[in-house]
Amino acid sequence: MEKLRVTAGPFTFDAKFESENAPKTCAAFKKVMPYESQLVHVRWSGEGVWIPLGDTDFGVDYENHTSFPAPGQFILYPGGISETEILLAYGGIHFKSKMGQLAGNHFITLTSGLENLHDLGTMVLWKGAQPIRFETA
Image 1: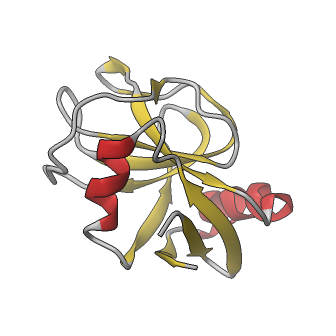
Image 2: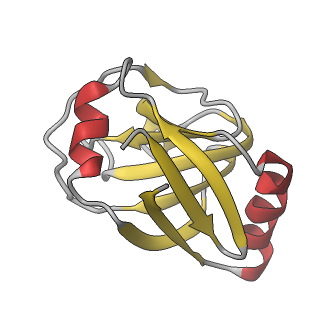
């Protein structure tokens, strides 16, 4: 179950788990799949969309963490000084919250459909929340 299909708004992307570098985060997320939620635009980080998860506890600590995910990379912030969240970069990102800089676990990478990524981000920015679904491919 290393390959995924991610449907976000009207776009479909192929993706892969980063199990070698973030095994605990990937294993925790696999337990909740298929996973559906809503994407909203980030507030402080730049060109990204996120899934706010409140006090959800995936039971993971930092692994393969970054504050600067590349476009097409999903990171999971496991919680702590800010709420738990999943973030997808569609452009330049410096991951942070009102509390300051954060780091999240890079655990999924999009492998196709990247030509639609910027359109997804700007759609969420200008048209509002969009549905997202993660499922095995």
